[in-house]
Amino acid sequence: MTDQVAETGESRYGLLIVGGNLTHQENYARAFVADSRIRLVGLCDEPDIPLRRRELNQALADELQVPYLQSLDTALARDDVDLVCLCPEPERRARLTVAAARAGKHVYIDKPLCTSVEGAREVVAAVAAAGVHSQMFSLVRSSIGRRCRGVVESGRLGTLIGLHAELLFAKGISGTADLTRPRREQATAERFTWVGSKRELFCVGLYPLVLFQWLTGCRVESVEAATANFFFQEHQANGAEDFSSLLLGLEGGVEATITVGRSGWSSHPSHGIHQVHLVGTDASVSIDAYRPRLEVFSDAAAWRQPEVPHPEDPMGFWSSTQEAGGVIDKTDWWPLAGAARDDAAYFLDCLDADRESDVPVAVGAHAVETILAGYAAAASGGSAG
Image: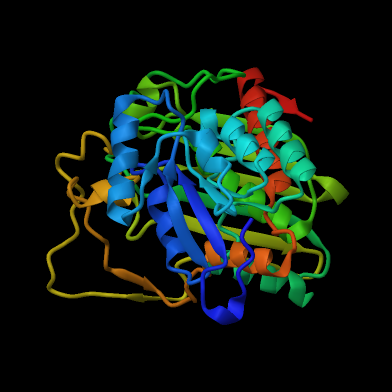
């Protein structure tokens, strides 16, 4: 790996990105290249991907003005690559992360880590064997995450005995699900994401699961779960839940609940409900991502959801398609809490100090294990331990 000296002002880390537009790489890559420590080497992917995925990869490479490297193995073997940022589909994520780690590269991975317990364990083992550093994206560096940690570390709660999180993203045109068809969960699934939907326990439930482990240091020991289809025909057609609830037993007797999902653009004045409730033996504290806030009342035209969403992004998942899909920002609520800290910059700080991230692949692996146990519990109508 390169070993450039900070005092020279040169970049210290060569970055290779995997995945292109219509993935979170649109955000992650730009966050990394905005840091002077990074030199972007190129974009690559597996050779046998579908043509449309190749086109989307090429589009991001062109926008970032870097080469699209055709051989993944050759790209991973380059001496000028120190760090790989991985955003392939979740079903491919484990094997590509394992390949990057075995090539001796530090890895920054989209969430969730992968789609199976076996894959998650392979990732953890590969990272440990290679002695590289790892980080999975999460919301622990968001304002609400930092405020939660401040409350827990202040001691005002006494002993923390309970946590509850509500996180429902306000995206997509809701009201189209057939409510006469109650959801029947399946214990296992082959696929978790599509163009117009995602399994929301898998994609959104990870955030509070990681937050809870980050706050408490406790792993989940038992899971009870329920999933539903309340809002979107796109989710229902793909067998993907748009709402889920978990009841969790954590180590040390801590109890936790999680309510997550996607509820539609018109369901919230901003980006959606995002609250965490902390219960202690001496006090309880509720933290809302949108409090304190400035509420704006004016003669500006009222916000309207898109009439005809983008065909490749009907939920407004991706930055690159939001404008073309008619997605406009909501401006009536302006949170006054501090902005999120840069997750990419934090990981680079870890590399500088040669220390482990606070959200390494081991944390991501436990979240995957808990989520999959949740699906099994929801399918059986019981619990999983």
